[in-house]
Image (cartoon, rainbow, N blue to C red; front, side):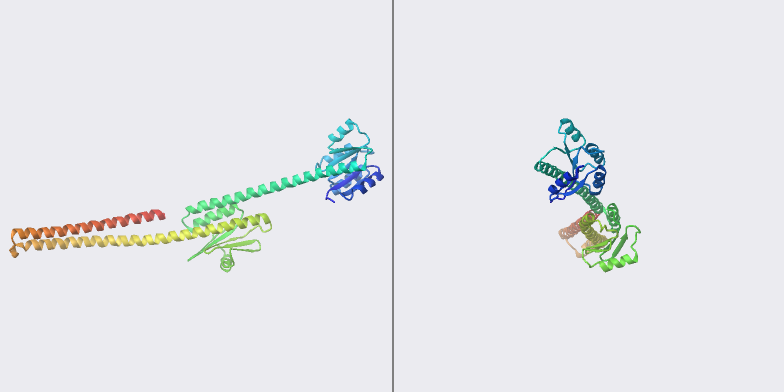
Length: 364
């Protein structure tokens, strides 16, 4: 027995009983002998098939079919008539009939006709179900694509963020587009907390973050969900737990978001550490420049004093002209070597300055 409902309409009660006995093993069968009963049973049971006699007293089958079809076109009608003429068949077709059985008929013929139209009705129902399923899947796919679009935009914006406050701002923009209300906390060396609506988290929310930080990646309580990573947690305050499809999709989306937040936090930590090292390098370079400049001044003064003393003592040493020239050349060579070393040191200074500038440019 299939789940199709059949309504047999004929003013002959014996005919209704006979046809009903034949078909009740295959269908959920109801019978009516008047148009009033037909309309009442139609409203109550919403039959899939109607076996409808045309020649009814009062309202005939053609008019009755037209009236029933005004508000519901999902059922099928097999007309039964003692007038097997082209005009009668055209009237039946024009009224919305799906098949026509002339009287008198054999039960095998009627059974075959009802079975064929029943299969036709099942096919329409299946097609309708498939269409509804496809439409639902299309809407779900569009919603999912839209949600991941917001997530991708958040990742794009967060790449340009240079502080946790900027990351939080872009995070709350995305969660607002997802119709979610959230709080966010970064818990590394220092704790930084943000709330989507109030700016700052309430004391009880701070306590919830602390208590639920170690419960795992995702934890649901009532209509709230908290997601945790090593240095980041966020609390969703209006998770749609009653909408199974949307809830499951948001669980997948938020799992991606928490990983992105963790990666951005680590990136900012590395950037801040690199900036700290750069500051130390710059301090060392500045100190080195000062020391070198001071050393160069002292060295130049000492060399000039030594040179004056040596040249002033030539006449006391009673040196020959050749000896004086020899010592002068030795002194000049020493001065030249000192200048060369100082130039090399200046080159190292410039190289350190260029390196510091390159690191600064990379960080910023």
